[in-house]
Length: 141
Image (tube, rainbow, N blue to C red; front, side):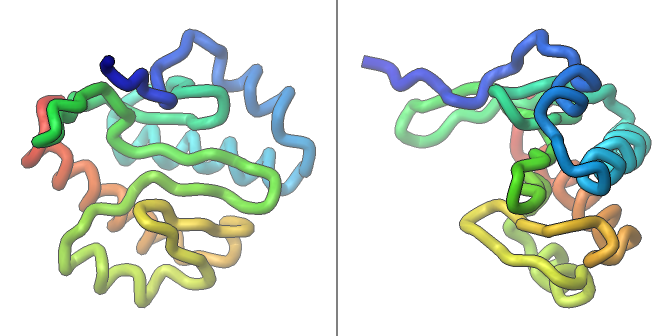
């Protein structure tokens, strides 16, 4: 039986999500800043993916196992403890950029940041653009 993807596009209004989900005023302001920046960097309007991810652009992936689906090209989630950024690509350039990002934690494929003032926005931009480029080269957008 095919596995259903947890993260799928939803018609939820992004601003409505931010207003109802994000309680901390600084995180709310940072979320709107990220929406503005990621819209400019990606050239795509924000859309909701799953219940809590603000995504920009779309691509289709297919693994060797046969599992496939759609995902945002870049995105973030303003979770309570920290932002989760979905912007990392497995390249040497991205690994080098992390050294100048600022204060963050790295998961398997997510970058976790408490607040935007903890990181370098120009480095965040470079990571986003590197991820956009990587996805465009390796997947159908």
